[in-house]
Length: 397
Ligand code: SF4
Ligand code: SF4
Image (cartoon, rainbow, N blue to C red; front, side):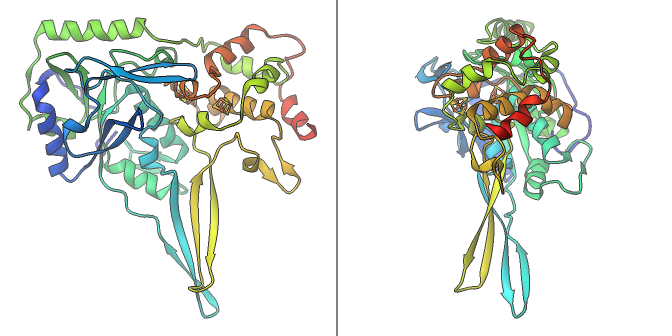
């Protein structure tokens, strides 16, 4: 995931709990901006930190459709919580970013690239599904970090931030009620694309290295070889996490079923409940819609272009000279779900969903993509089986 070639998986080590502060300090000393899970505004957020004391230690979360609560957990556990509403996405693809300014110089314009230089990020405590989401966004933003190749139109800021990032992933031993990473084959354990991976036990962490950078970092910490009892306990916890997934989604044949379900009556049912608030797209670690806005300053003669996150759930996102292409909530929800689980495959050769469950937790009316996709597949009728018709019908609605 960082700037090396194939991932290196070495023998597993044990890192005691009290080494967590030394790990964060080491990263800060090496010039990293360290990002980790902390409690902010009543939720677990990925925010900058300078000591391990800022991590959300001893905090658990409860998640279900439209429901999120923090609770007291085991005071010895740093990562007994699961993903919150934000993700590493905001650090590679910021919600708001100045792109360039145009300045009038006589009869010409001067263009200045105002995209800032990203810091060197070290993410600690990100999850396997979030690494999977980053790999999906790599395709969207046109880069292959491992191969050091970029499409000519790759996003400059994203590329610079991704090239220098370091990832310390935490394998999930307690999934949330809305998680379904096992169904999407993205978790709960990270298999590759990390610098270090941690599985948390009460007394310390089982650590695996994935890159030379990870090996060098671990070499500066008081790690020892893990005992067979510690390794067995870690595998038992990961097995239990797999068995305790809050949700599941059968993805076999799902793309084909969705491709044929443009007129399914379920789209009307979900449209009755959906508020078109865009929460699901804002929290999703793979959604990438954006828009730009230009501001003019007559005093300086400068025009500034800024990019903002947008959502396919808003009217203005698909607005053309004749009005919005997707004028109904039915059409917008259908577009979003079908993009995530079906047409993303056509566009990027991967699913657009990693099973993190955020869109279920943070939907104010608890709409559940696993439930909707399952209902559409299971209630396939002749009337619903009209490939592509809906996109045309939408113009007339
Ligand atoms: S599905 Fe839920 S979160 Fe998404 S737009 Fe509709 S109401 Fe909002
Ligand atoms: S669609 Fe929902 S479950 Fe899938 S990656 Fe996005 S937020 Fe997570």
